[in-house]
Image (cartoon, rainbow over all chains, first blue to last red; front, top):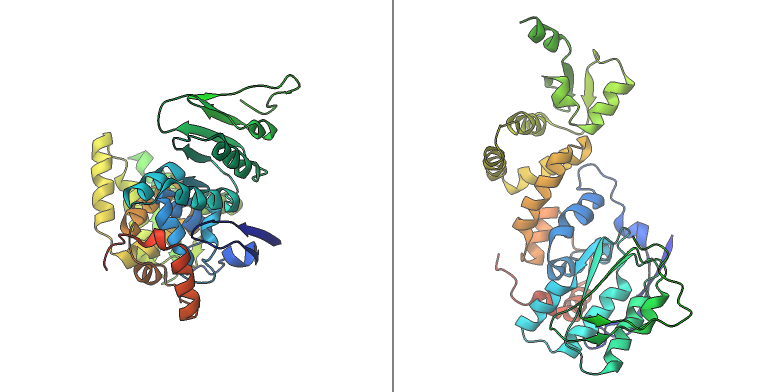
Length: 184
Length: 159
């Protein structure tokens, strides 16, 4: 299966297109090795995002293994970047790359932490990157500081949402909105 | 006494790759999903060969399955902590492979937690050694990836 991977990380990764064969990267058949299933779903799953992404330097086989990890805790990532002095715009660039690239087959939960956003345009960019994920099942919008923020309207186009948690967010529903059919 | 006799006649024989035969009770054997399905498929009196598991790993798995039946939650926790502490890095990896092959669900939950704690914030070189990975990047390719994800390398532990 040929897979199209699209990386867009504004400040620290250049815009590029990479074609990789996902199966070739992950299929470890030898019994003397840990299976990629255990590595990805059991071990990397438990590690902070920074450790997970760092595995892409290990070897060619590992280059894109991290994108299969079912859960990326972006909140943890945000706090870590802040603590080492990255600015919001830089962090946003890296995060939007994750959101677009992330390919966890059973995305359990993708925590999207929105930091305090002062301009509406930033919010709509985040909305746009969220919409790139076709199978997006769960969405948690959590704002790290209190205040009322408008939800990007293209969130409503995510018809496959099964879980949705909005905190400190205001959602305006258009009259023709049919609802999220799969929401529990 | 009669019950004990019937239990031992029900026991399942497992033959490891290094030729050691283990007799385990059905309760223990059924906690290894791979064995469980083999018992269902074949006559239970047959010796089951395990071509990918050695005696050390199987004895550790049996030790765990027998030991975790302690009565209190705190006793189980203590037992699990000691069980993990006794394993070297190399043994941990080998055992996890065996556990993955035999599908021992409880150890498949417990062991990755220990491994994750051990490799968290460790250098790329440490991980290559642990997972047995051969670096097939050219030095310039590796340097380029490191540069792209420079944020991920801040404050990594020294080996």
